[in-house]
Amino acid sequence: MTLVLIVALVTGAILFGIGVYGALSQTNLVMIMMGVELILAGALVNLVAFWRFLHPESYSGQMFALVVMTVMAVEMAVGFGVAIARFRARGSVEMEEAGDLKG
Image 1: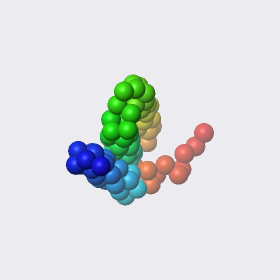
Image 2 (image 1 turned 90 degrees about the vertical axis):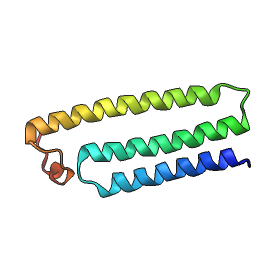
Image 3 (image 1 turned 180 degrees about the vertical axis):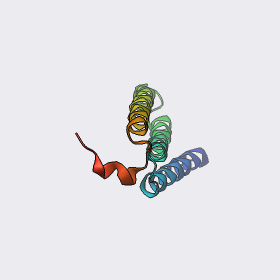
């Protein structure tokens, strides 16, 4: 393993760990979504690092990275839409109050 690969993997692991902590420790919906984004970003960094050092001749790693970034953008758009609708209906985006949803 080269030093560049190790740095990329450690960076991805740190992003993933911060994202897990952020997603599990927050009660605000927007902060939870930010934690999930960090989880996906850490996984994406590791994915690109492994692709670069294992199969640099193929473009499958780059295509998969683009798909993951697209999914991240869609997830944020839908999540912010839900957060805005929840704020308009209830006046709060705290997840502690999400259990009392009514149909």
